[in-house]
Image (cartoon, rainbow, N blue to C red; front, side, top):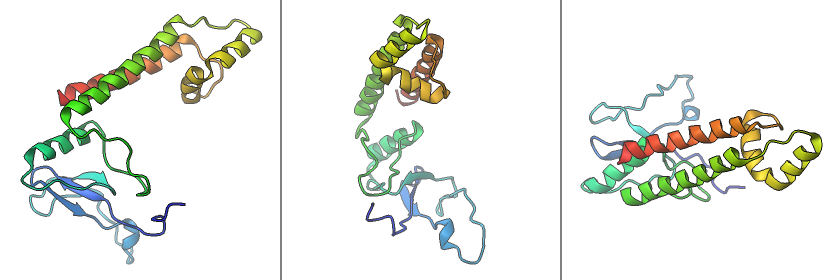
Length: 175
């Protein structure tokens, strides 16, 4: 069990305009029944702040390049959320590495799409069992999302097309 699970520590909110971070009270911190406003605004400039997670460590205020990188990460949905035990996972530390990360992810997704384009759909139970034995990882990645065991090639193509489009959108945001 996470040693921090019993301790509540507060998420960090970042204001990209002021290049400052703030911690925010948790709903459980409010004992009098007062409802927290879920929009976290910067106390300095009044703009909405970004919930960067529990493990976020802000750069120095005058490190504009790092702040721009943090803003790029947030723009594409990468934040520092975790329970605190093992950290948030891999987070690219530069714009170049962020682009490389998404390019590699896109390549993986394209390979997955190729599987679905070339797969021969089973036509009977014996072929279906053989298909699951041989291709369980590829089939389960899509089947679990569709909630069914029999997955048509078009379902797999549609799923990976959507994932590729999402990555391309993120790449366009940071390039």
